[in-house]
Amino acid sequence: RVAAALAAVRAYFTPPNEDLRAVRMTWWGGFCGLPLLWLLNWINFRKTAQEADALTELKILVRLSLFLFGLALAIFGTWLAYFQTVTETLVCPCDGPFGSDFSCHCALGDFRCTAPP
Image (tube, rainbow, N blue to C red; front, side, top):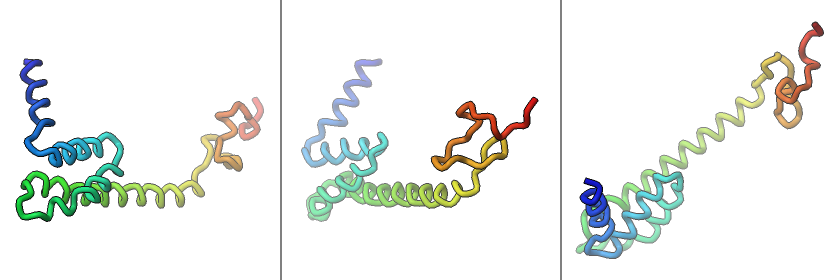
């Protein structure tokens, strides 16, 4: 079973066209936490995908690469905007203010926020 699975993976990454192989590799690379590869995929292969004799899979992967890069960029921008506004309202577990570096005094062993025993 393992040999058959490895043969299927090998067959997938050895297509008849070298461009399709590169598009597939950068497509899957984008899912490994590198969405910039999707942008590079679109930049490098957008003209190849517009040719009349281009493979259908190549066209689909190039279009989806641009879409997923835009989606990843939107998610990152939303996350960034959200946490830029939320950090002003975060409080320390001891209800004391955060330090200038947004560190909680309790976590650092500084117990000035707590009442004496």
